Length: 467
Image (cartoon, rainbow, N blue to C red; front, side, top):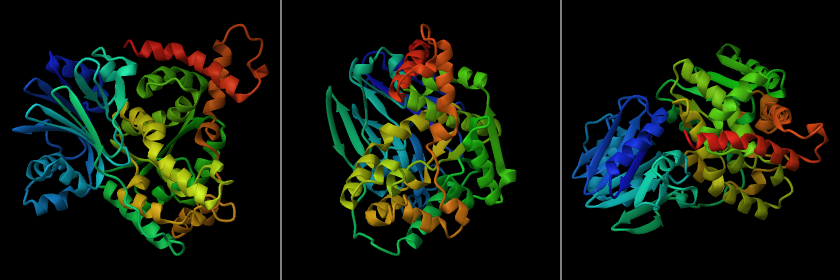
């Protein structure tokens, strides 16, 4: 939906203007700044529906990034006549306070609220929307780290606001606490597939109130989204001739959605030329992160070109329903612990990267599997239903079987960075650039290969930090 930034201290408004300029790609349709008592907050707007210009102010002030899916019900309860989720959130805070408001929200969000010299930052419980802050030169926050770099903050000073947490800054003091999460409930040991299908179906429906594209890989997770959004256009990117290209085409055919599929077959030159932009977007030159981000970068770029501002992703299904191969050897008790840990870390490991690379193309990413109700239900499903007879994501496959053909329900899929051919292509790019090696193929082991790819990409990263 947008990008937010703020600062407290000397020249706070000047700092916010500089930060907003750096994240203009997150909101090319407008911007605003509000200042009060030495604190300034700002917003750049990606207009998707009838969003109200931000920051919103009336004694206090709010700048907000995200989507609140139940805002109409809340607005009706508060007797508000508005089509704006940001205005609804503002009135909720004014009437009942931040913690009460957060307890009623169903959505993905990161926001800042200021009043009486106090800044409060809040992030949704799954961490779908990013938020970073720094105390190096007073206090500042932003949707992307690069915005904080531009006002002189160093990497060591920048921190990530944890999902589900609220941080309050006042008179030089910081207090942080958890204000939202996912409650536990009675474990479901059988017959969970109908409940799961209905929860995912509702989640998709409430995220599809505007035309949506889908990041489509042809795997179980994105195929289920496509089957639930049959009018959506499907976007996929991979190296020409790669495994993913063929599998994606086949999946679209099985879904009878071939006419909806936009397939981008990448060339080596095209891939290499995009690497600096992707590194700048995700602010990392880690080879694995870059290789995962590249297909999504091209998919969201193509979707933006075709007029889409919202893209759905299957992110989160692996962490909720045991999709990774490493889970196979775990006992049920171990699996439950591992899945909870991976869910706790999904924002840092995956969501922040995906948000950055799609918003670089002014496209908002929505993640139906990380809907609050889907997560709460998934946490109640017994581990034995997530891996059954060695089959990963077993319960999700049963649920998807209500509308997907068996060939899509039960097939295995490789990790995207490998099946798309991107990682192998990056190895070839590194081989071309690394000097003093007779053959990159003689390198022993993927770790060493990854190290050399990192060395090759690092100059792009350092250059991006100076832009």
